Image (cartoon, rainbow over all chains, first blue to last red; front, side, top):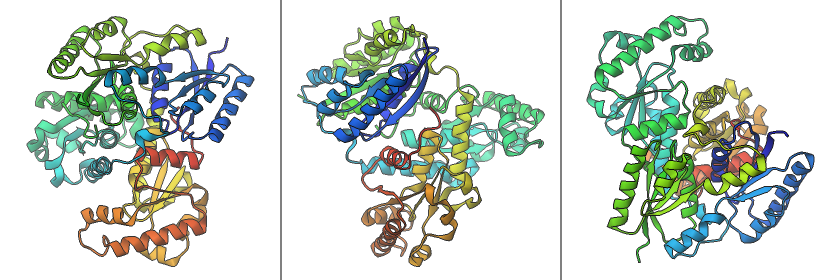
Length: 273
Length: 273
């Protein structure tokens, strides 16, 4: 029996909740090779019919697909359940339980959950992203006073993705500062960072992995050599220890894991909740 | 009866799945004011005991909290259910159904779903983010040949957040190009964009909202005036119509909605699935 399945995420909105859920659940099944299809904005019968036809065609050509649904409309949901697939409704099981607990009737309007943008939250994310880009790679040090976080580490240790992700996901104002060879050789925290110790967080990385990443940027340079990468990382980790700066190794962790760890260790909360 | 509740998301990993799910479900209940607490990396008994104590204290001080769990360990899950709260296990209901369908035993190891970083996916996201930043705001036009998407629109219409989000969320290489007043007055597509028509997508925004956003950057300037914003948006929308460039209004949509729409309209799929 083959372990290949198509996973279809159907939503009347962006489908991000269904997709996030599906990935997490499917990851529990070792050996399953899943191909994902995202079908967002399925908010009327015609669009749903097209999705059902697609699912049925997949089923006819192989094993029946797994369908994750966050549809809110009862009629659309009933129709989807007729598809030749294992159809899982993410909210069906919980909506009634929650309604009973809260004594509030759930809304069944399509896409209602997110239909109006919260302008102030949007502005928070925009401002946080602006801040991260303005203070990327050691720029805009004069803005450090309003940073929630300053991520430090050697070049290409993963600082920018971490900061940008935190600004979008949590509305966190995260600057990043590259530790140069000159500064690392000095053996102490660069002067420009000293007033901001409480918000510093370090990133480190396996020297071999760093070498691979730097090779893409400047192949066969001193900058990308194993020797140089090993030396920089050794000095950076010594600095983190000596100065008591919390840090995480980015080598084997996803951006989500790295940033969740930073949030937890630094006691930061999302500004978007 | 008060409609205020604390929603606690408990996970042995980042908690992003639990938080995404909780926000979507809670949004169905109009009038409920939820305060969110994220408790990630709860992977042993001691950490779980601390969470249960916190939940019980919240319950003692008011209405019992709503707890969303993605814990995988059976013992931790059983203990969490003893908390004084409405405890909802996101996966419990689906794991057995899926196991039966797939004929695969689910893994119950803590954090197993994400414990090893997929280096090639990480690299894809890193490369896509690098691309978006290298080609932000009209920079790096020489790289347009390898763009999955080029987002165009007037200054501060929301191009950068959209591009950065798509790079992180989907691994999409998204450039963005600001339409200047000079170019808009010309009434035709800027020459540098003409070879890339198939990957162009436009963003537009309500002129009053644009005025508010620009006021923050350059208060009381010609650039931020209502007249100027109205004129630029009028010309940009005319250009989109005239050239048949698909576009979306960013005024009342979240970044997730805007980018999901772009992905769907342009027929783009996530490179990370």
